[in-house]
Image (cartoon, rainbow, N blue to C red; front, top):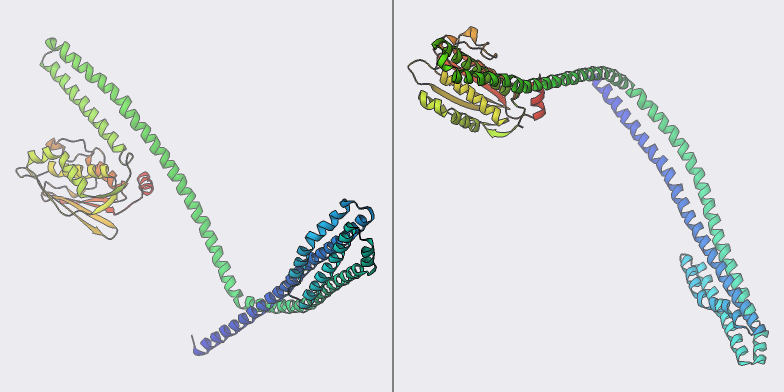
Length: 483
């Protein structure tokens, strides 16, 4: 990129920054133009609420004073004490009303002064009422007439009405002023909003014209991403269908295992029972050939029963336990305990190095090492005791375990066959076994999402290499196993 292009790009960025700054300033103006009138309107509404409360209190004060005066006149004319109830009520309540009025105009000194004058006029009025009632009770009609002739109470009532009118008029005048201010402010803010919106629209248009190429690029990328997501969902759906199909197959295999464990073993037990009956009941009439035939049948049924049990164990690998953290030294130790008699009889020497910790299925791992060690012990060189070395190390997020023997070894052509079911490469020597042990090992390693391989040369022994992940989740193991 040339220096002129860099300068041009910098100028565009600076102009865009200035336009965005102007847009933010206009947006601020619009917000303020909206907030200020609203705050003023809130103040006016509060003033209206206060004026309404003030009006209610003023009306109540006038009402109770007038009711007190009417009650006084009724009592003077009739002498009935019932007429004094409005007077008593007013005498007890006017002070609280005047205190409310003082609180409502507390921010206006002139209005507060008028309230104080209302209090004074009210007290004068009630003092006049008290005096007339007292003179009436004493029966001093002359003094009573003289008090009423002074018209002091009338003047006090007129003063109360006059002051109440002043309070009302001042409050309404203040409200009208505030409403006028609000109307003027609304006009100004409406103009500001309009100008701000127009300016903001121009800013947005400029920004849009600058970033439109980017929008086109993003739209194109979104289209490709949408296609990729569609394809991914299709693949995921296909995978779910395959997993569901595999689960169904696994269920069928479980049913087959149950059938094999029950339906196939029962006939074998029947055959074995009849062989024993023939051997016991008809032994005197059987010759040597007949007894040998019975023995052959008995051995065949035993092998068949053992084969069925082995296949059942093979089909159930990993189905009855959950993975957990364990050191591989533990399943190796348990495997050697199970093989203790073979180790002792063969005088095998087994060297165990340091073994790492992984997350796996303990029973399955014990079976893995037991089968590999049993193979190493079985296929040793004639005249030499078995010598086996077990090593392990961590490589990143995986572990590598090697089981090396110094036995007879395996031909290169046969190394891919040994992990298949029922494969026996050394049948000429009639070694015991069913050819399923290494197939067990392969399935256990696959359950752990690992690999199992062998390196071997005839006469130089074999090294089995097991690579397992350090950790795995149970659901991942199940899917891997299903595949």
